[in-house]
Image 1 (cartoon, chains in turn brown, yellow):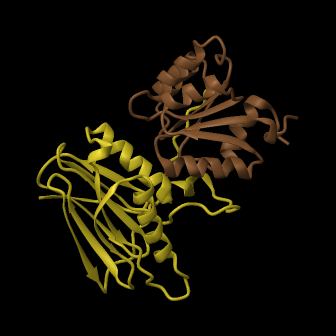
Image 2: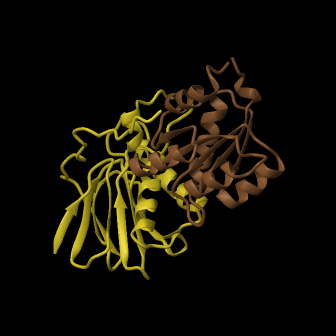
Length: 129
Length: 170
């Protein structure tokens, strides 16, 4: 059973309020090492320099969107296998399918509850302690 | 003039003239966003600011929170052609109408102010708080808004059912 406190997380969302809410939710779930960035470009630089186990990224972002970000992560030889969970503001089936084809580990539709986020993370990591 | 009514939990973006977005508010807050270059605007209507720590919220209730309502509205504005840096907002509602319900209205109003400040969005006009219901009328193409205090307003309309929209892939 993995300890949530041992999982390093990067949260990427262009909205400050949403990043703060996701961080609080993760901290309530026991995650201790949570970083966040407002853009995929900044997040890529950050996780390349200091690797994480889990990336939670919004889809709908200006400049580089969540799918492009996922693509950049997956083609990177160092961080390519990082667990990637996509957040979408609506369950646009085409986007979710495309993300699945590109190797996303799971996705969460906003608005989400803490329980829903926990469930999606546990589907990848197993039950968290 | 075509009138489009927004109820709790909804948002709408319009980019055409001769259309009015309208809603009736008590303790809820409506945010009207406008992009004067793209000539489009949008309005939402939310019940509460954001879930408090330890508050066990059902999935269908989350859509009524401002933190999500604002994201949906901003996303819809940008998809329609608005630029985030050009957005300016008008905030309405957040009244404390029913004694004994605490200060839900004040808390909603505070959330709306804080959200705009945190996200760096310009606030053009605020009509928040007080003890009266409001009717808000917004011309999204022109960016003109007015709010009318009403003493005999109908109760805020609540959605019959909020659809969940999940896709099972995993």
